[in-house]
Image (cartoon, rainbow, N blue to C red; front, side):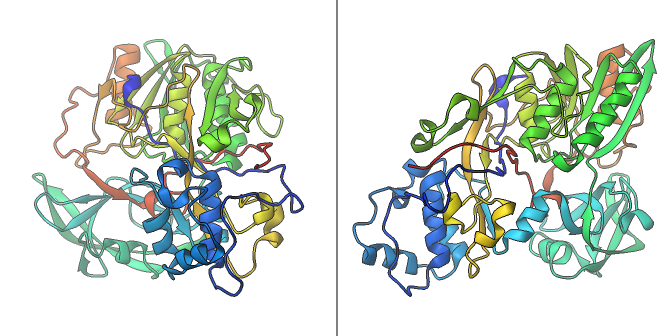
Length: 489
């Protein structure tokens, strides 16, 4: 794995501060004038002034930016739209990934893997030289509405409700307010995508929970036991299921592992730490990652707050099922981001990481969830929901720091380049977990000098515009579910 290529990392931080309502927050800047009607903007500015990774680079977030209450109030009143204020006044120019939501509960549920979905996971691609767009099915979430319909991996759609998909309407048609829509399907004939008359109607379900441990298999190839695990999201609610999957691989005596993260956009940092331990081993004296915050905050943390080591047990106290490998084969693409890239970077100082696929997203900053709870330094804590200002349900998810591995490496904004390049082929996606699926076949070829697939040519490489996962609240964020003991001064 080439270190000079790794990621951006957006990290949701479920932070328990040692501050309390009596301590308050000693954020810079005056309070707004009474009855100014700028509660949302005030919360956003003060939270960003404390936590934002690029606070020193944004002049409007400077500690001495405002001399009087009047000046501060007038500034906050310039933008009546909180979203406009956040994106146009508070963000650093290099920040690609900070975001917000007008309802913190929606954001928190999505970070927990709970969303309204029909269970169809797909990518979207722009037709060459055109504004038209087509979708291709990546996989289907079990027990979802899509799982009960006549649609499967590899199928193509070019329209919704009879309207051709374009770069201007796909967001509304596929991710808008309509819970039910009909996909107009297409076929590939001689490398040309053509409507085929098939329609599939799908309905989104409230509260659909996706188990990210999608597929676990063991292959015996020329006497080598090869484990395969497809893992589609670092969702900490499923850490026990992940550990159980490694228990199966351990019982199968696997000596090589192919970890499929091609569609994994990230999630929990602790889940990444646990997964790394399942691969490398329960060596609790070895450093996995270290956090780096803005200059104001960095000096206030102790080493134990900033450092995460490999684990011997899960958060539930279950012993880690470790394979103790000296190398791992990771299937990763440009949809592989944040906690997935963190895993790759954190393992790199200790074992050989063989990356098969395409260049990853490149996300090397993490974020945290902030709400209007001044007494907890604006950090969301589920036990304090009754302390959040009732008139302000907005939540922001700004970038607040970077993670570096044990060698101090964290510069991964260009993404990880593959050791073995193999793009997904829209005309031949293959069956996930099948030894002839192109990316898995490439890994088996490297491991066992064998492949049932002789032709790895790609006729229609995926040139991704976006994917369905980018329209969930979690998107490609990474969250640190670890209490940090810090008092803001």
